[in-house]
Image (cartoon, rainbow, N blue to C red; front, top):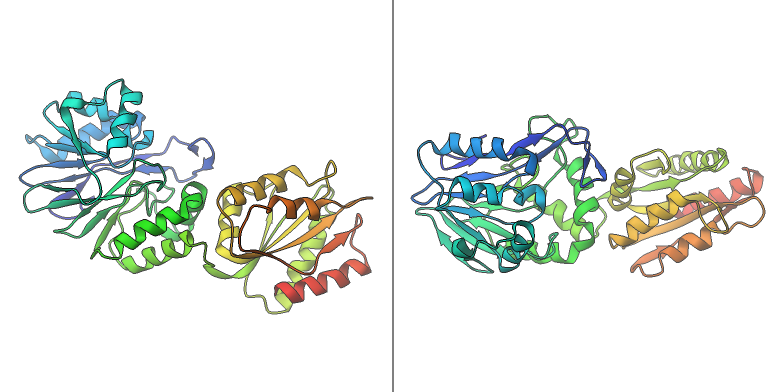
Length: 385
């Protein structure tokens, strides 16, 4: 993959991985991106996962030929991007390592050395001239680790964005859904909690003329940059991306599911543009999280369980609040054989959340759907349509 005559791709694709970070299902694999900038001085941008060290080094050598790199720029110390730093120094002992002060502290923990004799410490506003190419460093703390830096190459106007603008999926697999779907799941699964920090970086990026974005995961973005930046702005400010309603439910014997299906039918009949229904016990958790953040309205339907709420629903809500879920309207449907408590329990789980509006109407079901249930559903559908 060639970004330009001077900037080359030397990353790798992982098709053996089943769970990224031990939890995110990645049916299309994962890309660990790395780049080389060729100039009077040569810089390699980041490393790759431990399992691909030999392939990565071979990719670098294939690009460089008889030349040697002068710098390894380390933007992020998570192991899928830093695992081969030591191997790089052994292969290219004359090269310097460019990174943030905190990253070198982490290197000491990882490799039992902070490469003191090779260190080039950079921070906000630092520059590194390679010749005609100039690297301008931007601190990006907590996007999504505290040591992160991003790098703007001002000659070709390329933003090396660390994990920013990343997505799930290997680069050699065409994604029929396009960039946004798996980038959204990636963002809210991994970065979502840190929206304020992403907003701070976007403000810095607004002052830059960006023609290309090179993330550490996913494809190189070189067309319609404003589209990607706008989505990141919506996601990181917890704005509503798409008009619609999500219904997330749990059902033990199928009665709550039946109620949810009826509610979805009513919402569509009343003109709701988009209704997304998710069975939390059977669908991918992080796909559900993605949809909850995508739409402005969320209906949670659950059975009462052990005097509270069904475990899968509790897990779902806790994952939302952990990621600062906000600026949404939330409604509740509860089911209980003798003492329904699910709605009260679900509402309490949002106690620390801000800008959450609870719907005025609540639906309470006693085991199965009846005439009074339909009347309650009509009122909720009118409010949430």
